[in-house]
Length: 446
Ligand code: PMP
Image (cartoon, rainbow, N blue to C red; front, side, top):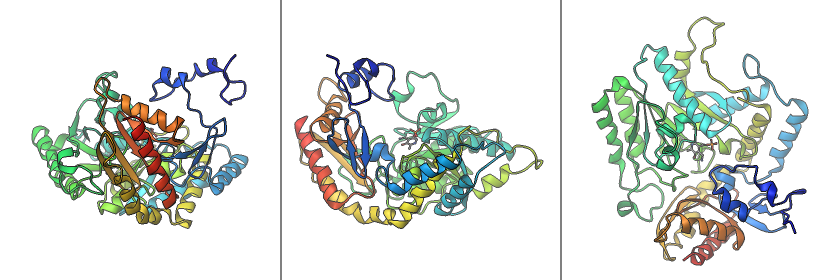
């Protein structure tokens, strides 16, 4: 008999066609983990099981799932205006959302370029950096600097400045003229850190080495995640980002913060830039801007960069870049409703208040079997499990599967590192539940 999965007329054969992203497809399709509906902190499977969402979708549903005002805004927008071309035309929602986002951003980050994802936001920011250099007659400043263990999405720009070997090695040389700063994680110095580790600010100084080697006149921009999320929740060492800002200023290098995860409340502020008191030249955002409900990303740009590109004849295009769906009406409607929710429910402040509660609860896992390290900051935690001897990543994989099948919990893994990142609406009880489910899962795969 054919097995059904709760999709209309779906059978195992129907699982073949979709090539799932960042997924062990063959294993996943033998044991599919299907989600049928969601509400708040909870997912429902096709057979009616309720699971706790421990990772806000994929670090994105910061206001929780299926929030009524966001759903209503999308429905209303779809009925009024499904689409408007963003090239040479516009619609109210895109202007309104850009203004709202600019108002949330620090300093004179006053201009917003829309795209559809985090990856596109990174490629957009890198291209704006290069176009800015070109416009200023500094066309030699094309070198771009990322960081080891950095994740900046999957475009060719993003994997080039990114520092994850697995995401690069099958895909050729990437962009030329790329350098990487060292990552800031050292277990010996930082084990079981809550918030910003004390050790590691000096690692920013490696930028001086790259400048000495190549000369500042060849360097366009540095891009970092203020807190590296998907590679294991690596908070910036105390003073690191400030030091990086000072070095970039000294050498006239643009500083780009990739806030695709840290934006919209994850660290208790609209942007991590605010938490750390560091004003970057551009901020990449996506995910939380619509609480994951409709794809939307963008780049927030400082006044001087924008102004440098707004030169030339008035009827000439200033930046030859954009997407058919830049500022899509449904995405902008979702974004406006999401920002209202964040404001009306005080969710960024809520994340700040819950941060110590979350940290203490998660740190209670430190004595569990195979736990090598735990790091928490904001409402995010990374838990490193000791790899099993024969197969790195297998324990993490088994943990994720066990969590879904047995503990009614959805988490994220990268290798043997587990990530927890609940929506900002999480209650203290749900934090406890999340930690106890995680504990049971860790014990099960020991
Ligand atoms: N940058 C960062 C810091 C991210 O965490 C991610 C996704 N996790 C991306 C970029 C890519 O975003 P997307 O998957 O929307 O392309």
